[in-house]
Every structure is written in C-alpha cells, then in structure tokens.
Image (cartoon, rainbow, N blue to C red; front, side, top):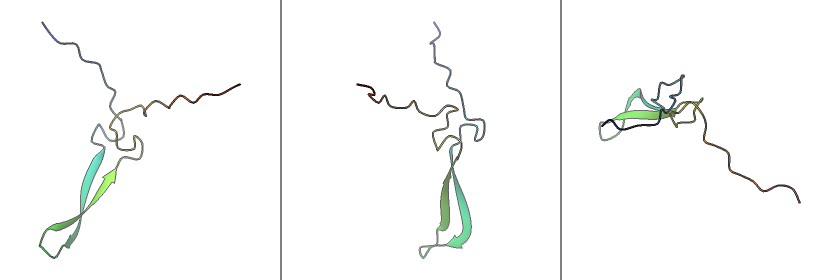
Length: 61
C-alpha cells in the first residue's frame, strides 16, 4: 500500500537548493579552496516556498 506524503511546496527562486558553496579562486594555507556559503534570500535557507509560521503572541486585555 502506498504511503501518503505531504506535498511540501519548494521555493521557486532556489528550487529547494537553499544553500550554495561558491569558490573564490583563492586557496587556504593547507591547499584547500576558499569557499563562501550563500543562502537563498527568498526563503532564508529553508528551501520551502512559505516562510515558517509566525509565533502566536498574546494580545489584548
């Protein structure tokens, strides 16, 4: 019997790949490449189309 999985909408700006490592071309002292970690600005690195739900804040009297 097939398992039912919730459909999680993927961020349309990053297609779910929310973080990327970009090389600068320089090398560290140990010989490895220097990389920058960049996250998607639309989803803030979650990979989902909708941001996390806001926290409930008690208001009123």
